[in-house]
Image (cartoon, rainbow, N blue to C red; front, side, top):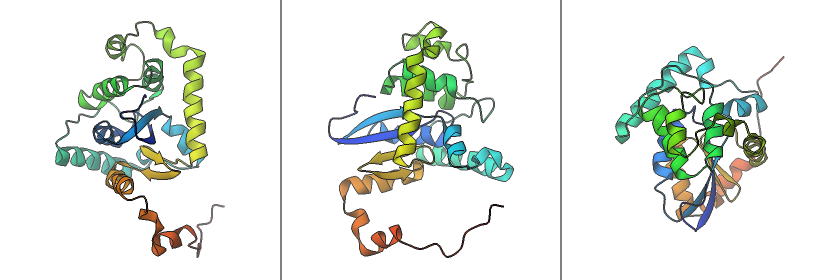
Length: 215
């Protein structure tokens, strides 16, 4: 989206499938001193690119993740209601966001539909009310080549930046992954030398003692 403010440039990579992206958005949209560009990206594509399993693909982790998200929402006083089924196919919501300009109004409306109201979002029909509110009444808008290309471009940019999950904030080439890294990101904004201490610098060169076999 166009910057929330006109200062520090920040890219925010997210997928509407993520409850933690919804939670982080509540902080991101209120941040001062930053110009945030919202970049909808397909989380499943990142998982495939990095050969990762998503949290919902491990049964025990799936339940924990859902409980953790709801607990964090309750603790923060953020209304949250899970959609009828999860995970769901987020392509329609991602494309709708891009078709609507990826602005704060679009991000807000779609997140509220999915995670505040707990409604389905796998098709244009399920998103029709949100789409209409964003000035989009024709489902063809989600199929336009420019919309699909923009989503691919966001994915390519995410990979180039080293993004491996959502939500992720990126600024100055530094990645801050996860809703629970919001405070770390804000600390970095206040103190850009955060990663310049000897021990922080050492982490970048820390050797691998052993690696899991994949054969």
